[in-house]
Image 1 (tube, rainbow, N blue to C red):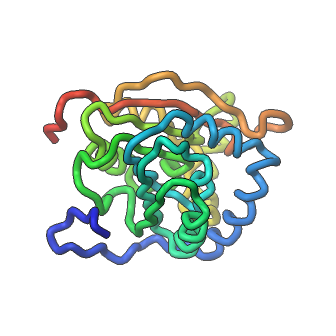
Image 2 (cartoon, rainbow, N blue to C red):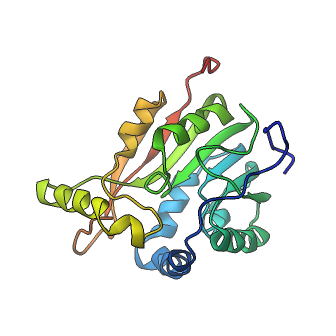
Amino acid sequence: MRLLSTGSGRVARSPVHHPLFARCYARISVGAESRLGMAGVRERLLAGLSGRVIEIGAGNGLNFRHYPGTVAEVVAIEPEPLLRQLALDAALRAEVPVDVVPGAAEALPVKSEAFDAAVLSLVLCSVRDVERALGEVRRVLRPGGEVRFFEHGRGGGRVMTLTQQALDRTLWPVVSGGCHLSREPVAALRAAGFRLGPHRRVLLPEKGPALPTSYCSLGVAWRPDEPDAR
């Protein structure tokens, strides 16, 4: 907890608690590593990173084993208690130092401009306030710092988009730990002031029927070089 930036030096109790979803996600995500090709996506997401990295919404820590040896330290933020415990277990097996920390994306418990890179991996769909969360990412990155992102969101034709929006208004967030299907992560990054680099659409699964969760974006963005005046 040496990275805390709050005046009191304490982390508030996390309001995120989805024990049923967390158990289901932990099982499904492990199977998706090979079945959906997620392991390969994680390799591409994290390749070439170096320095100090913050991963926001680390889940059960499946990214940890894919960080290259050029990374000096990973601070992994995870608010959900069961997933955080699984992430702690995964951190012990990682080849780079990983510090798993409780906290929410909208109020990261770390110092400003403390990181060279931030990783957003299937997290913007479930944060409560995307704009505030990305504002926090800007705050904790050094000027010129890098964002690696892999996020699902709106995609497909009109029928699929309407389906995603209907699910978002009804059962989907309730049964999936607050996840939303029709958010637009690339547009949100641009609106938050990040400079977008190469990014591309990834369809998961690559073969087979398209699902409301299938439309993903994989890419990189940067915080502008000038100091953040906000």
